[in-house]
Length: 591
Image 1 (tube, rainbow, N blue to C red):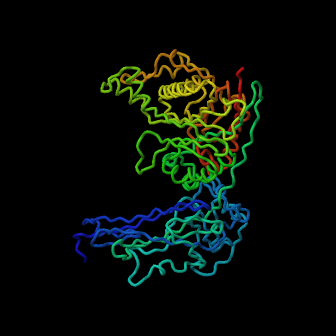
Image 2 (cartoon, helix red, strand yellow):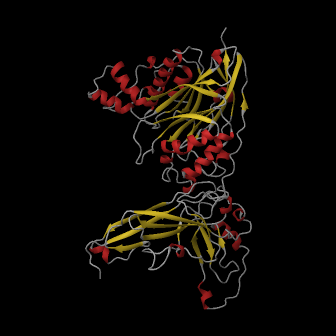
């Protein structure tokens, strides 16, 4: 028996998400060691583990991807999944909440060994089954067994617990699986499934080698669920025209605002009704990008864009599509790894606009400046610390001035537009903070716009995390707030500071209109649609003296939103928010 001194168990973990055509698959592979104590020595090793006298050395992974043969996903002849591998047809919603396929194991049934994608298909097929004669003792042990199937889980097959046997090679590790037909398709770490993969399973083999000696340490193989096809193109969003009147018309442009739901917030705990694979950023990014580009906007305001994905994906994809952009991440530090913090992104079409000025606003910085320069607080006082703790929520805003590539020769004032993009604090228990942020944003915009001439058109878009009955909405739409509004009189507790000035001071000079309210006669029923909340949080505000909305795209009806899920996000709508779209026109109401 080996000495228990310096004895370690080695473990190899390997996982991949459900494959979808066009979505990058990135293996989650890591190898680690655990020093064994007396209690561990007598315990059997877990699968994909082995005992060694040393901890695992520095190592590198190699990968091989295999495409499996086609097979029938469901024996029920009327099942849509026999011919469709659309994500909409393979979601938990479509499968009736089941993530597990069924196989009939009754040798007395004509359905013996038939596989069904869910229990509903099995029940329907059972109505037409026929009883057959038993032909042997083994057949008497029938039953209906569940097999790991089309849900979120990944079944582990093949591989060797504890690495390769002596004398084996990497090429022998997968071999020819039962049924044959497995073909190697890639040896890179990542793999992007193609149309040829849809309806088939993939296998991934990962092997860990010593970085120093090249010795094979451990290997493991996992088998995926069936590869799904690319999600169908987003439904076309029709535009409703506004009743136009007054003022000479200038340039027109299309603008959208969209909270795209950052990966760091898209968790199974927060959205348990959405399939795990449909929450993955690779799947959602493809849908979101197509949804944005499908409406061909001239200006794009995005919120909850994760810093690492802006650099690695969003900017490159939008640039390839003809856009230029700027990004501002929230003030706080990353959540774990670098880049795991969200922020705001603003893009514009190069053939329509070029950038004149770009600025960013940090509400934390505004709070510090307001405390010291306006209120005269001592930065070290308890009063100031409490004040800043209440207001410092890391939210940001962006501000750009865009100029038309093909300017109007007759009136230079109609050639530029100022666009602000923001994402206010989300906690419903802090309406005073949201109101303060809105007020400060408007103050900053007033100073900026007025210093460049009052005729500069302005749009303020984003996720304001405020419904139309809030003081935030009142301030934006009416230039002031009522002193008796509950949001102005928040009880923050005995130790909580009052961060708002007198209501009479919470004002601004802009004449703002809401694009959707102007075109539709009311705000949408919802721009955020989850199990926990359904309502309007997003808006597109415009300066009514020099801009007018020509049209807006209605938010899809609830029946449409529920078509492929019980709430958002779903396989069809990849954010918990809905994109807002409006066509705007610069106008000249001057003499």
